Length: 334
Ligand code: KG4
Ligand code: ZN
Image 1 (tube, helix red, strand yellow):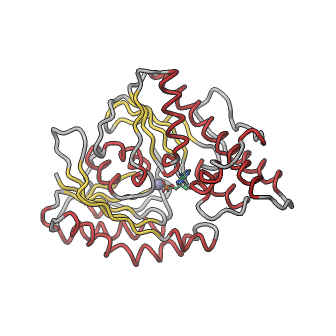
Image 2 (tube, helix red, strand yellow; image 1 turned 135 degrees about the vertical axis):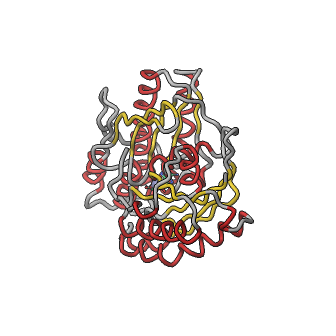
């Protein structure tokens, strides 16, 4: 089965072709093309939705055409088209959704509207096969959620952030510290040179729920740095402590859910899952506390937004919807 995936929920424009075989447990990537307007957003310190949507319009057709060419297939070879229909920025989402609807009509191919968050989790089924049931941790710029995946198409939401997402907190703290956008990878870089013991920022919502909260941490950093001229080393030390606090609570609650539901695997998804310290620390905590459980993480380039994960999610959760009934839904959740 050949699926063309289309992703345009934020500032990345993605198209990918995957090959899935009903008897095989994972899918194979034939092509994965991503164009990003990230550089433009670093000049404004964050994403201005109108700018992101305008860039999507420029990229969408070339990216789809490139993905088909790189996969060496023609539109008529496709079995289906999958598109992110939410959540995301409405202007950005509309570009992908309306393009996918048009192609579905013109090429006469089934259309599979796909949830971006579920897509992040399914990046784990590209070239690997997590055993179910699994706990999924989605950590991106827009979301922080813990879900129980009992089987394909059966996801139960366990908890999520009550305010900022983990990536959003990293981006905003990065901005407070004068680091370039996006904050996540820059904080990771600076944290390597820092001493995490020099600061002691509060651990947010350190309770027995599966919810998260990161806005208080952001405010604590704000109070610490306001009206101060920060040395390079101070910035490194703050980054080290902030990263430790965020990773610490993510791991604590993920392990708690893993133990409670007795799952076989943990799967990570979303841009923050590209963080090497999170990947390493979660792996080592699992080895020492729950040795029978296996950790799955996507390749780093599949953690941030891409269309391969959308096509893969559609392969395992294939619900074809007539193109006339598909709409962008910016507030889509689980
Ligand atoms: O999944 P994604 O590409 O977009 C959303 O769906 O939101 O995630 C983007 C987020 C940004 O907040 C960025 O700072 C964060 O992922 N991020 C990282 C790293 N790489 C990207 N956070 C921590 N460490 C990284 N290496
Ligand atoms: Zn995302």
